[in-house]
Image (cartoon, rainbow, N blue to C red; front, side, top):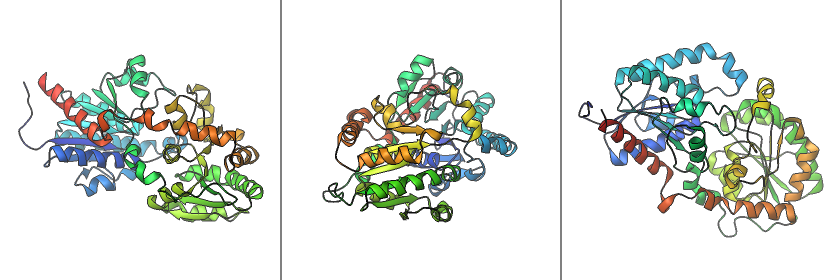
Length: 392
């Protein structure tokens, strides 16, 4: 028998950074198509707030990345966890959805569950239990009712690790393939004037570590391909820092800002040199062969032996093959990066192998019956609520 108070659906959504805010906004849109008067509160970013969600505090207060940064901000993050819990409990949600950023969102969700045990919890974006901290999966099963996975192999991982019920709902990028792929004539045939995109990261720490080796690599690439056009998509708020770093580059790329310009660059690009992250999946769906590198902070480097994953590149994990070259820390020297990228800027076996591998992404990421990720996510959230309500 349900003890839900009649009235609008009340959903708590907790995000910890901008990417979670994007997912949360899409989920709100999908929920409102089913429940137009749905009330949303919790911890929200600008996109969710624009859709009427209320937030206990600005999401920027907890959006810190990297083990070193998190340690430095622990007191503030802990305060915000308890503030978020108090705000959500006071609002008495029908269901809570924790979106990504598990260090923060799971801390909030678990504490809400202790105080409101009748409220079902959904985790939107599985933690990387397939890479490290596999113990998180069975721990999550104690308080999460369902996990919405962005990667197709994650439901099997949770079954194997005895995690919560888990459903692949699709990555939001599959809804945007048309924006990523070139229209006829938009990507020129590979010639003496190829287009290279360089992506040193979207976070300040990534840029600090990767700009110098990427700059040296680009200089070597330009020497081997004198006609190459180099584009560097930059996050707007980091543009000044990127421009300062570019002062030391012998070859100056053209900076583009904003998502629309970034996707336009991908539609023209013949190859990419990129930091590890979601951008590698964007490039893969755009059909751009790439070389991936990453350099971690000193604390994370000490934990590297605990990593249990065959690749740091999402494309490789999804297709089940290490088709994209990847280099961690000093293994990604400018000389190595330049040699691998140069091989992708001409016709040859390296380029052909990657193009064939990238062509398999669509099938690997397909959803049943042409479903859309945010719509499928909303359906499972509502089914989870209905199941929990039925047993009260």
